[in-house]
Length: 344
Image (cartoon, rainbow, N blue to C red; front, side, top):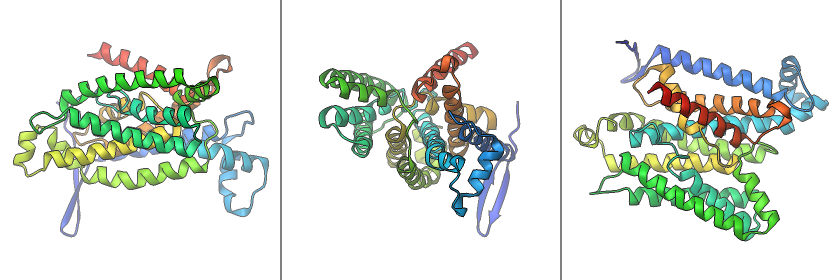
């Protein structure tokens, strides 16, 4: 039986519970994200050493016009930051969904929310020949609509969540997947190809216009998730016990579902459908930290690290394949699921 050590940090009349092991794991994940980021900034057709990358980053405000500075700041840094923000958003969303459903399969790509967001983007591309901004907006709106439909259909006797939420989400995701296929068949060849590229999930040609919305969305939604983290942890013991402890279960569930769907929709709008991250990041973070609390921060950091690592793998794949990031994470997710099934 393992003992989880924790300390109480008192600030005036308030106290904060923190666990040394969890803090150490978060610091290690931050260092891993920084290391992967430095390597990715130097990876590409033009290769730069870590020293050259750090030099270009530190000369940001000096009007650096060197080729390395231009490539890193205009092309590669937006890609790395987009991957980090998307991974963090998916990791946090996966932690929320797994807590609400009380099931390790409760991630947005499994229960259909990512597929619903993709439907909105495909409709914009195929039906309206929309640009990147309209496509991203369509993904966010469709993701929110899918979440609302799944949440309402999963309610029974005034309560939702649990296995019912997962099963309804899987069914709704299958319907949205069929709608996506119909839309692809309806569009012309160019539109269908453009939609297929978007569906593969990609970090190519990311700019600061992709980084800014993803950063703003994460900054606005993350505080809501952290504010409700303790209530979600108590709700994992059951709705009846949570109500006895004074928690407004349905309101908490609705707010956190909207927060998680918002994070998923923003991530999907920024990089397309990305599988595996929301499923595995919270589980891996919980295994490493061994903490009973909801792994919001550690799950977000783990998601960023996983997506940066997957991007590094996709750029250095054999035979110069340079696979889209969505396909890489899907393959890694399949291997992870096989490993998980052999462990249980």
